[in-house]
Image (tube, rainbow, N blue to C red; front, side, top):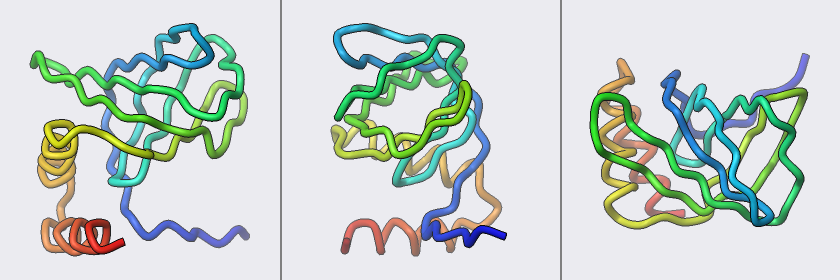
Length: 118
């Protein structure tokens, strides 16, 4: 059995997203998200590059979250990306998204405090 070493909880959240990598754009579906990264499902194979940009389009809004990301794992059509950086607006929306989709707001607040310290 593999050990789960995640320190930040993931919430299931489906949204359309776009990944810009290696000079190309790929349409993907966001499956889950945390303060540290996101899991995507992409129909087209994405070439491995050092960094990429991820845009997540929040449903029923005109809000787009934008992150600089790096690929940390891939299997079949699933790709796990770690967030490297973002603008303050995207971080604020991510925080709110996590709070609204988690049943443990105190836990999310603790993760945010740990993330800010680290």
